Length: 112
Image (cartoon, rainbow, N blue to C red; front, side):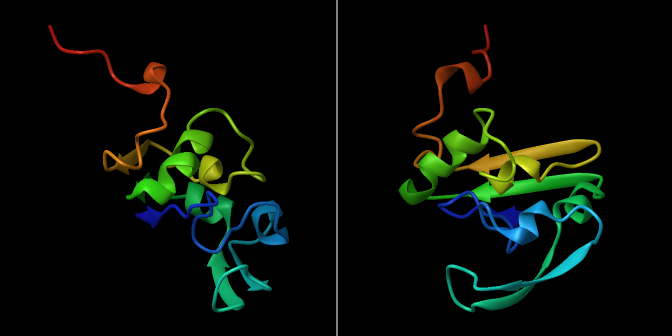
């Protein structure tokens, strides 16, 4: 289970950062993170994608744009949450506020 930040970051993989571009290692050091602490250790996207299931959690109005961007076809370097998916299942868990900017096409059809 990973939280999604308001900039679409997951783990400590921030948009456009060297860590989000890493493809050969499972863990990286992150320096100069845009929020404290500035120095961190993070799983990489290949490590996250090795999981059978990945659950992504976003709650609150400040996550609405991030959820909409990540679920609307952005690239994983620009929106790291896009690249966080499981081998068998990826589950997004959103409250109503975080889902408020999703396009209607992403909602499941209503039951009859």
